[in-house]
Length: 318
Figure (tube, rainbow, N blue to C red):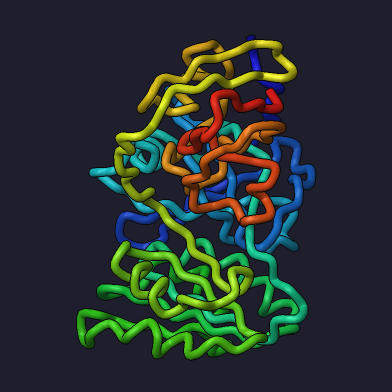
């Protein structure tokens, strides 16, 4: 039994640019050069790579550029293999399946200032938002980028640097500044975002403790390890549309149980940070462990890669 089909569009690798040491910038277009589905600033797409590998990347270009998707990928030899496949196997002219864009930043008109803090290739989630803000001119913004040596994706950063929106902090020549000193206190009209190494994110979380949730945005490339819960109990998933019941054993992930039952679920990070495996729930009491859904979204959706159930039965819209 299959879940409802996930829409995937076919794209062609139009060109591959050098984004600096170990970084490539991929421009993806429709094979017939039609417009691509729209996206919000800072949205993500899943790339369906050879070998049934699915990986999530941030869109780096302005949403107004509706004829292409641009992603920047750093080759990570110790990663899970997606970046190596892109760097080593994908060439100009190749076909890549791409999910519909999802997520992104809510650049509310009520917010008059945005501050983004990024480390290295962690700048990618904010490039699209920065391009959008610079084009629309509706709000002031500053991007603080921590690097060791030369910054990545210099070509994408160049327009922002020329307008004075980017501050480069080279940690080879000076210590990384305190995150709190970059974002300031909690004004009601400022939104802040962070993506980078875990230590930077922890400092950012400390600096924004007590801020309204809607004014704080965190992107993670690596999910946090989920601690074992000795009190975790088995439960049953009821699939409302498929009319199936799936048993989830103690310690088993919801995603693994669904896949074992033959349910086709898209997944990428398997750690609750990318949003690929979002499913709506209808009844029961899910246990949310993701880092991507807002409190409002959790009222109707969950991430099957990390979610659990506090009730014996949990009904999903599958």
